[in-house]
Image (cartoon, rainbow, N blue to C red; front, side, top):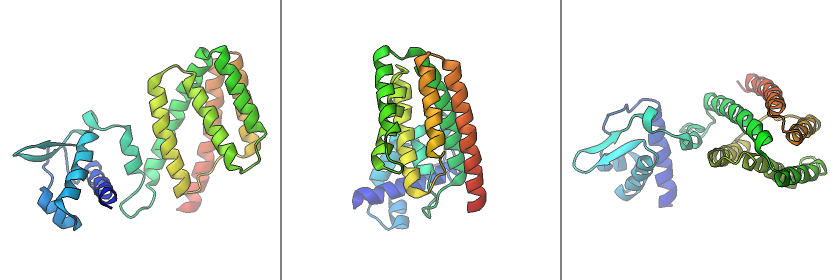
Length: 233
């Protein structure tokens, strides 16, 4: 229970900092004041503040209080998960659009590099998993896991550890989004056409073609998202 409460307080304080309720250099209220506001123990508040310090949002200075850091220098991608929800639990649609835009740019870099760097062994595995996906039943949960395996193989083929770490974060965020809202996706038939051509680009080590395919795919996804947002607002 304590762990859950401290996470909730971390999220609320994070949003306040990101919304400039507390600015860089400001002091946060004391542990006692925060405990009173949130109606929890000081231990719960202390755990929340440790999380804020761990992600670079505050610096805890003994004897001088808790100071807000400069987000442009200390903030990182891990804040996406908190920013996705408002305090009332609803989805922040502006952040959703920004995340999907970032995801699209990362995807372009990943497929271009993977096409250029993939090994023959990696190509065989990518082809094998794609064939498994082709045979999956529409809407089957196993098919979703197979698709995740395929995307992970593509990221691994970049031979760039940073992309792997970013992929882990974005995958976790996307799974959260799928649980929160019905994100519009491309139809299965169109999706297979896209993946089939992408695999061909990898076969030919054609990074430019892989990049172009992702651009077209993301344009379609953006159109679907804009249609969905118009209907939701």
